Image (cartoon, rainbow, N blue to C red; front, top):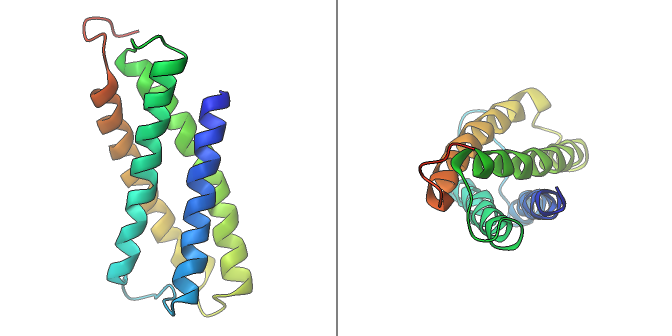
Length: 135
């Protein structure tokens, strides 16, 4: 669980920082669409999730890990990261983006959930080293 907390916090902090950096650059959440630069934020969870599951496999599993074990570790990392990111988003909307509402921002959070599930499946398949054992 320590691995999931560390990498989840890293995802949350970097995603929250990215929101504030985008605001400093003059981009703010819009109701009607998404700025192209916002798509760069997808790279943060992908890279950190990859590093987190790889670290878990190497350090705690001795280099061998089944699919469900990798999937569970991915979900743990994303849950911690999601909680921190949502807190950062609430602070961001409350303090800086008063024109945006939490209702408008919830669509982005739901999109991030779907992307996170796809990333979890992909990273889990990538790091499965015991293909005959389900777990």
